[in-house]
Length: 108
Image 1: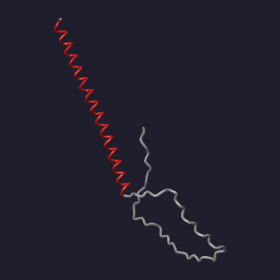
Image 2: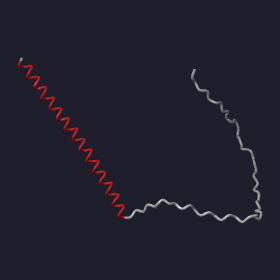
Image 3: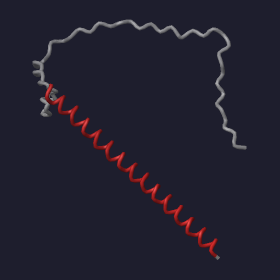
Image 4: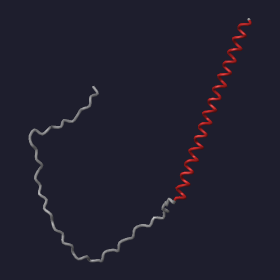
C-alpha cells in the first residue's frame, strides 16, 4: 500500500561510447582599446587590529586559563561536598528516627 515507486533506470546492454565532439580552439585577437584601462583599485584596508601574541600575553592567557580551571574545580568540589554532607545528615536523621520509633513500639 505505501510502497515507494522507484524510477526505472534502463541499464546499457552494450559498450557505450560518448559522442565524439571535437572542440577546436579559436584565437582571440585583442582590438585596440578605445579608452585607457581604469587604474587598479587598491585592496581595502582592514580596520580590525591584528592579534599579536607576545610572551607576556601568552603567559597572561595561560595564567588566566589556569585560574579559571582552579576556580571552577573548587566550586564543583564544594558542591559535591555539600551534597555528600547533606546526604550523610539525612541518613543520620533517618537512623535516629527509626531508633526512636522502634524503642517506642517496644515500650508498649
